[in-house]
Length: 134
Picture 1: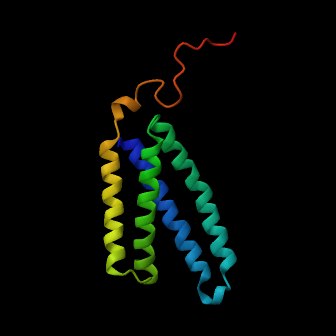
Picture 2: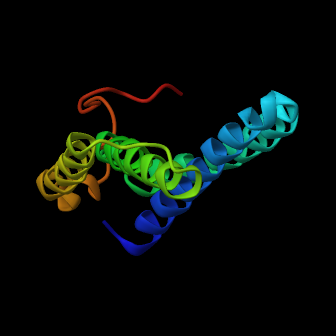
Picture 3: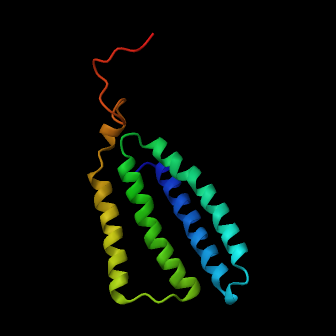
């Protein structure tokens, strides 16, 4: 994963942690602040879309890897953040599952072929032999 691509995936993941922390915070205190948690979480979620879209742009032909990295890291980071900040309970097998998800993201990334993704025309259907319209 290149630095700009990795940076966008990381920032997307951090924004998603903020989204879920805001939503969880909004449910505390008998739900009296739910609107504020929802508004903050929704604003962060809208901002995070920029970074995942940018990551897709930086990895033509590898959107499956970008999706896997973003969602896998999001799952693990949000679970760990909610455990740390709100003391949400995680059972030992859930920690093992998070480790397996991270291992899956790494294996998926190792299987990605950046040299193929950087070639023009690998991000969409094969258009060889098709004539351009005037």
